Length: 236
Picture 1 (spheres, rainbow, N blue to C red):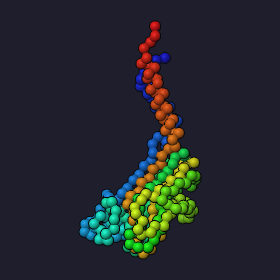
Picture 2: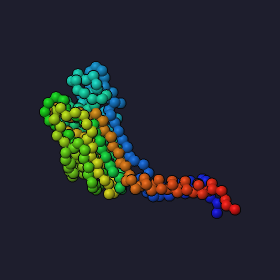
Picture 3: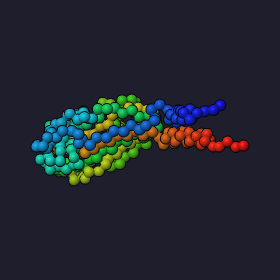
Picture 4: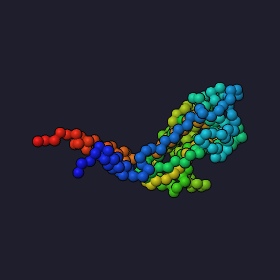
């Protein structure tokens, strides 16, 4: 039976997608550096801001600051003071919810610094689960510990105590997902004096396990081999 080029490509692509299974064909990716948020100059900041494009303030208050803010706080473009102007440290949570598939590595990165004004604050960031929490191989970078609080909802949080002079660095928490699920990302502080950690960027990724990608590559390798056989000259 003769198979045309379109048939060969369709078969190889189908084999690769079957190997991946539903929902594993691509990584879920999200990032935000707050530069799209409007900051009038002057005054160079917005107290108790709650109109983020990708986040809502789940608790407390936060301030949005631009590079010309009157407090001389530093960031790259716009950034957030996680303890707003009401003596009630805030928690930012992503508006979108993120699906991940079984076998994925799910990672949250934040770029954060100390408050630059004195004292020490607790910074936490992680995931709120909207499906039963089932994680293993929790990995931390920058965070010094993690917790898995069950109330009010199931969460996984990295925690670090930041002195005021802590420079900007990336803090990361990730886990391996034995089963598929859905989460939001959240970042906050327990500070309660209008002076909180500074947050400059957030990114999230849910990447399928390498074996899934290897099977995809193998599928396209089969496609290439089939095409080479098709092009080989017939022997007498």
